[in-house]
Length: 276
Image (cartoon, rainbow, N blue to C red; front, side, top):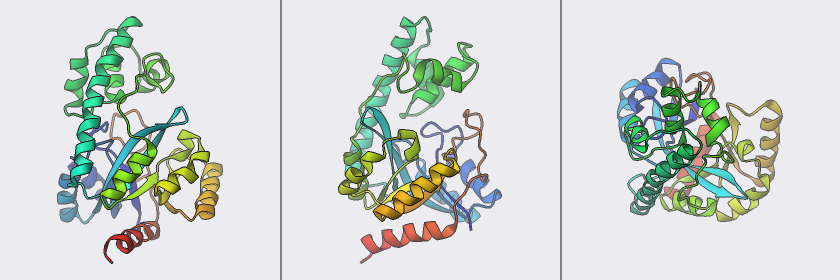
């Protein structure tokens, strides 16, 4: 029974609704999915509601963007209590930072001769979690670049000329927040961050898993992170990081999955911690 534990809806930087994603998951044979929007939990309830109707189990999740060692470190949280007040308070603070960041990015782009308005980005996003992908889509729409990839390559990547940081938790703070919401914190797509040396510190903060199976991890990287997970006694998870049709990512929902036994181990750990 295949699963995909890394999916984004249009409540963060995805392009499709939670309802459509769950229906696609069912159509394409997935039995368990996790909604892991960036710094927001709004899409979880509608996904769970549809999941009950179509026979797809929906795990409540989130993905926090943090920074360490001059790179982004993403922390996934699974089985979070998404009504936890401390979690929601921090999400609200992060969203205010995201909104402020868009104005700063637009100002940097203007100084580079690329003029778009923050209001255009907010209108396209349609919610309080605007991010760089929304800026990229506006750049494509207005003809400044030919693709979302070009927008990131030329302007928006972590070291790009229009990159702006926003209020972020530290990795340890994100892990603590997930644990406080009774969730399980997992280091997302570790090869993207390329800072394996941080894993012992993340474990000291309470990390329980590594996203070993990720759509862009090659075979060598998968073996590397399998070995690290075994070495440190961490759970193995995985997901497609699906962002929806037209998102600029070359993957379709259902084309990447992990076996159900990995989900069971994750569930067992959650139950061990919270149901005793």
